[in-house]
Image (spheres, rainbow, N blue to C red):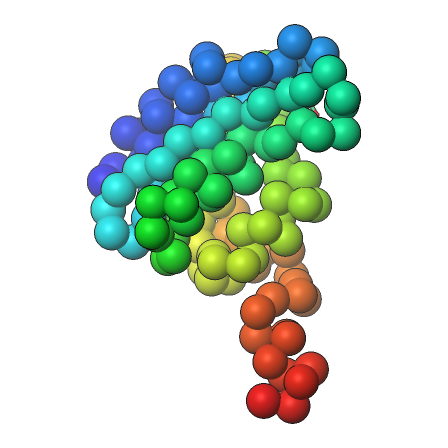
Length: 136
Ligand code: THU
Protein backbone atom coordinates (compact mmCIF):
# COMPACT_ATOMS: atom_id res chain seq x y z
CA UNK A 1 0.00 0.00 0.00
CA UNK A 2 1.59 3.24 -1.07
CA UNK A 3 0.78 6.59 0.45
CA UNK A 4 -0.31 7.95 -2.93
CA UNK A 5 -3.15 5.41 -3.06
CA UNK A 6 -4.22 6.24 0.50
CA UNK A 7 -4.22 9.98 -0.28
CA UNK A 8 -6.39 9.36 -3.35
CA UNK A 9 -8.82 7.29 -1.26
CA UNK A 10 -9.12 10.11 1.33
CA UNK A 11 -9.71 12.73 -1.38
CA UNK A 12 -12.28 10.47 -2.99
CA UNK A 13 -14.08 10.00 0.35
CA UNK A 14 -14.11 13.79 0.80
CA UNK A 15 -16.28 14.03 -2.33
CA UNK A 16 -18.95 12.08 -0.44
CA UNK A 17 -18.95 14.32 2.65
CA UNK A 18 -22.38 15.34 3.90
CA UNK A 19 -21.59 18.86 5.06
CA UNK A 20 -24.54 21.12 4.11
CA UNK A 21 -24.17 23.28 7.26
CA UNK A 22 -20.45 23.98 7.41
CA UNK A 23 -19.65 23.49 3.71
CA UNK A 24 -16.39 22.06 5.01
CA UNK A 25 -15.98 18.58 3.52
CA UNK A 26 -13.42 16.22 5.03
CA UNK A 27 -12.38 12.73 3.91
CA UNK A 28 -10.32 10.10 5.68
CA UNK A 29 -8.66 6.88 4.55
CA UNK A 30 -7.43 4.46 7.17
CA UNK A 31 -4.93 1.69 6.50
CA UNK A 32 -5.46 -1.30 8.78
CA UNK A 33 -2.57 -3.63 9.59
CA UNK A 34 -4.48 -6.27 7.57
CA UNK A 35 -3.69 -4.17 4.48
CA UNK A 36 -7.32 -3.16 3.95
CA UNK A 37 -8.36 0.47 3.54
CA UNK A 38 -11.45 1.97 5.19
CA UNK A 39 -12.75 5.39 4.31
CA UNK A 40 -14.98 7.95 5.96
CA UNK A 41 -16.34 11.44 5.40
CA UNK A 42 -17.88 13.94 7.79
CA UNK A 43 -21.61 13.52 8.28
CA UNK A 44 -23.45 16.54 9.61
CA UNK A 45 -26.93 16.78 11.09
CA UNK A 46 -29.62 19.45 11.42
CA UNK A 47 -29.01 19.02 15.15
CA UNK A 48 -25.46 20.32 14.66
CA UNK A 49 -23.84 18.69 17.69
CA UNK A 50 -24.54 15.24 16.29
CA UNK A 51 -22.03 15.76 13.48
CA UNK A 52 -19.51 12.95 13.09
CA UNK A 53 -16.02 13.70 11.79
CA UNK A 54 -14.53 11.85 8.83
CA UNK A 55 -11.85 10.18 10.97
CA UNK A 56 -14.38 8.68 13.38
CA UNK A 57 -16.56 7.42 10.53
CA UNK A 58 -13.54 5.65 9.01
CA UNK A 59 -12.48 4.19 12.36
CA UNK A 60 -16.01 3.07 13.21
CA UNK A 61 -16.39 1.37 9.85
CA UNK A 62 -13.07 -0.43 10.25
CA UNK A 63 -13.74 -1.52 13.83
CA UNK A 64 -17.19 -2.79 12.84
CA UNK A 65 -15.47 -4.86 10.13
CA UNK A 66 -13.32 -6.48 12.82
CA UNK A 67 -10.12 -4.41 12.52
CA UNK A 68 -8.23 -3.42 15.65
CA UNK A 69 -4.77 -2.37 14.45
CA UNK A 70 -3.95 0.51 12.18
CA UNK A 71 -0.78 1.71 10.48
CA UNK A 72 -1.81 5.01 8.93
CA UNK A 73 -4.60 7.49 8.33
CA UNK A 74 -4.82 10.20 5.69
CA UNK A 75 -7.11 13.14 6.34
CA UNK A 76 -8.11 15.28 3.36
CA UNK A 77 -9.74 18.60 4.07
CA UNK A 78 -9.40 22.33 3.60
CA UNK A 79 -8.56 24.13 0.41
CA UNK A 80 -5.55 26.01 1.74
CA UNK A 81 -4.00 24.78 4.94
CA UNK A 82 -4.44 21.08 5.74
CA UNK A 83 -7.22 20.39 8.23
CA UNK A 84 -5.92 19.06 11.54
CA UNK A 85 -7.90 16.35 13.33
CA UNK A 86 -10.04 17.65 16.18
CA UNK A 87 -9.44 16.70 19.79
CA UNK A 88 -12.27 14.18 19.88
CA UNK A 89 -10.80 12.37 16.87
CA UNK A 90 -7.31 12.34 18.41
CA UNK A 91 -8.76 10.65 21.49
CA UNK A 92 -10.79 8.24 19.34
CA UNK A 93 -7.71 7.26 17.30
CA UNK A 94 -5.78 6.65 20.52
CA UNK A 95 -8.11 3.79 21.42
CA UNK A 96 -6.53 1.65 18.67
CA UNK A 97 -3.69 3.66 17.16
CA UNK A 98 -0.18 3.31 18.50
CA UNK A 99 1.88 6.49 19.02
CA UNK A 100 3.85 5.61 15.86
CA UNK A 101 0.73 5.40 13.67
CA UNK A 102 1.23 7.70 10.68
CA UNK A 103 -1.15 10.62 10.37
CA UNK A 104 -0.89 12.36 7.01
CA UNK A 105 -2.88 15.52 6.47
CA UNK A 106 -3.45 16.85 2.97
CA UNK A 107 -5.27 19.89 1.64
CA UNK A 108 -7.09 20.45 -1.62
CA UNK A 109 -4.12 22.55 -2.74
CA UNK A 110 -1.73 19.65 -2.31
CA UNK A 111 -0.16 20.79 0.96
CA UNK A 112 0.88 17.80 3.02
CA UNK A 113 1.95 17.31 6.65
CA UNK A 114 3.39 14.02 7.87
CA UNK A 115 2.92 13.42 11.57
CA UNK A 116 2.38 10.57 13.98
CA UNK A 117 -0.44 10.08 16.46
CA UNK A 118 2.15 10.56 19.22
CA UNK A 119 3.09 13.99 17.75
CA UNK A 120 -0.54 15.04 17.59
CA UNK A 121 -1.66 13.74 20.94
CA UNK A 122 1.11 13.28 23.49
CA UNK A 123 0.29 12.23 27.09
CA UNK A 124 -2.96 10.71 25.89
CA UNK A 125 -5.48 8.94 28.05
CA UNK A 126 -5.47 5.43 26.61
CA UNK A 127 -6.73 1.93 27.41
CA UNK A 128 -3.38 1.41 29.20
CA UNK A 129 -4.14 4.40 31.45
CA UNK A 130 -7.31 2.67 32.64
CA UNK A 131 -5.39 -0.48 33.56
CA UNK A 132 -2.64 1.50 35.31
CA UNK A 133 -5.22 3.58 37.19
CA UNK A 134 -6.86 0.41 38.42
CA UNK A 135 -3.46 -0.91 39.60
CA UNK A 136 -3.51 -3.77 37.06
N1 THU B 1 -14.37 17.77 10.84
C1 THU B 1 -13.91 16.52 10.52
O1 THU B 1 -14.52 15.78 9.75
N2 THU B 1 -12.75 16.12 11.10
C2 THU B 1 -12.03 16.85 11.99
O2 THU B 1 -11.08 16.35 12.58
C3 THU B 1 -12.37 18.27 12.20
C4 THU B 1 -13.72 18.69 11.74
C5 THU B 1 -15.65 18.20 10.23
C6 THU B 1 -16.78 18.30 11.22
C7 THU B 1 -17.69 19.29 10.55
O3 THU B 1 -18.57 18.59 9.67
C8 THU B 1 -16.77 20.16 9.71
O4 THU B 1 -15.52 19.49 9.67
C9 THU B 1 -16.57 21.56 10.27
O5 THU B 1 -16.23 21.50 11.61
